[in-house]
Length: 229
Image 1 (cartoon, rainbow, N blue to C red):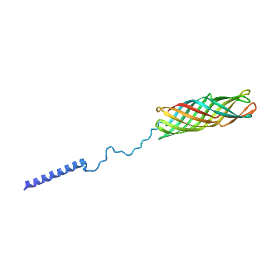
Image 2: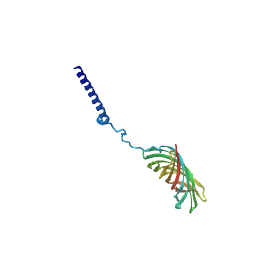
Image 3: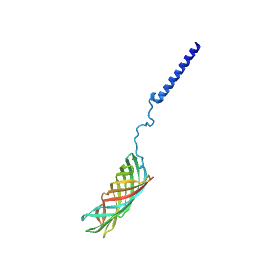
Image 4: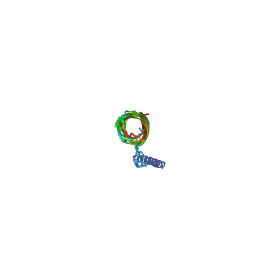
């Protein structure tokens, strides 16, 4: 009798072990709770690296051209002006995704000159210095190519000489508008090509006791280089 009880106890123990082993195997085979995929990750929206943000300095070289106007006692006299122009510049850009905002100031000079015949002699004009303070607004056509519009305040100092009379210098104030493209070669250097229209308003200049009004507006096409810090 004792032997029979012992056999039953051993059988029950073996049966319990078998059931526990089967349950563990079933869990390993996916019979337990469902596990998430190991490569699961929340949705991700890539953003452009802000390579354009920062301070920069540089320079431009270009060609200026346009027709100015002199209103004199003899009537309105147009004068064609053209020549090479160069500037040094500094600015700062802020990039937010594909949008780039910036401010820029430049200072330059060149050989923007004219010579026109008038009833009072030969009228000659020459640019001494010019500058501007502008904003820039652009978007990235590619991560390295910025297309932008620009506009702001401008000034220029010019000489006016009428043969037989004294030379006069006058400073003009107005505005600039333009557009361009800038290519980022690496994280620190870029090349640009832009068009700028300069409207300098009109100022009165006295020559030989006569009051003349000059309006020397012009266009500029220029290329430039900038270095970012």
